[in-house]
Image 1: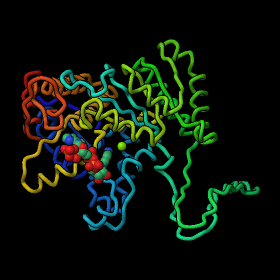
Image 2 (image 1 turned 60 degrees about the vertical axis):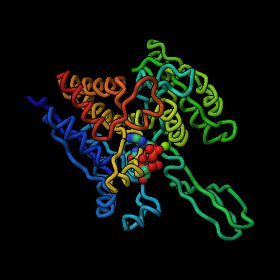
Image 3 (image 1 turned 135 degrees about the horizontal axis):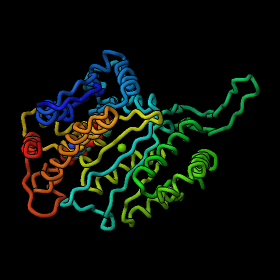
Image 4 (image 1 turned 180 degrees about the vertical axis):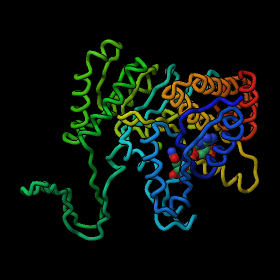
Length: 400
Ligand code: NAP
Ligand code: MG
């Protein structure tokens, strides 16, 4: 008999190869075993275009309302995509829009599999990245300058007092400049989310910024983070959580010769870049999970990788593909486990854990997709996109 999921999950569908995988995972690994109501939002690039991106905003609001969402990878359109799909415009990144609305922090953790050793010798335990998911370059204004002139930043107080202006550059010729921002509220909730997550996992918390160069902007992050750490000192001490601040470049150097097992809080851009480095260092982008945690509690689960466009075109040409569905499956299991905790339905949590174990045991038995075959130790058998999911299903069946 199917296991009942009580509250609907917010299901956010996406694009290209991950959309194909999304359907396979539901049909093969979820629907046969779960009675699972979902509130469905289709973020296919064409639907976003038809709704002038309103569908993305609605999906984010639904996560805030229901508490748990699961999202497929989506195209962030650039000029090439505008042409490819005949879009009205290059709509903003859906993840950026959702993060903005939920004011969340993104935590990324590698899925550790025994026969896939990290490329960095010293890494023994997962390094989890907490990426600040609001502002900076992801919510910027930028301008290309075609002729000489003065670029300024201006702050106009709402109370009518004198504006403050600073010259960014006196351009003698063409160039480019941008304005970025962040808010105290968002930085505080970022720091708190990281502190809470480090306490929950009982791991040390690191934070790095470039405060030697950016003595106002980056220093503001450093100071607020330190203030939140001071406020939560008792809880952190009780959980044995140490806080360590260092320059971002020093942090990067230390990460490369550390054994891991800590939470690395990163500013938005650092988190974007470093999580991809960690993902490939731990084996594959397809072994990296991503959770957006809103300070009010709602969570959105997804794979850290994109829509795997190259594999999709191979699929459209009728060629066999070997795309790894692990992170997409873990997005679903993460969401189901959280839903089960909130609903008080341990049988749903149990199903999620069994499905995760089935995936890991399948890979550890040597059955894996092409991306892992190249980095695995011991005997391997390369399977197709569909073949991997069938192998996981077989193992799952033996556990139910
Ligand atoms: P990508 O989809 O992550 O893929 C980059 C490459 O990584 C692939 O070509 C593939 O390498 C490998 N790869 C990634 N995931 C894999 C998987 N599950 N199994 C096997 N190999 C995997 O990044 P992209 O090609 O730069 O971006 C494609 C689209 O995704 C873009 O439109 C981008 O906007 C979007 N994107 C979305 C998200 C999101 O929604 N969270 C995140 C990032 C990018 P090989 O080709 O060598 O096999
Ligand atoms: Mg990235």
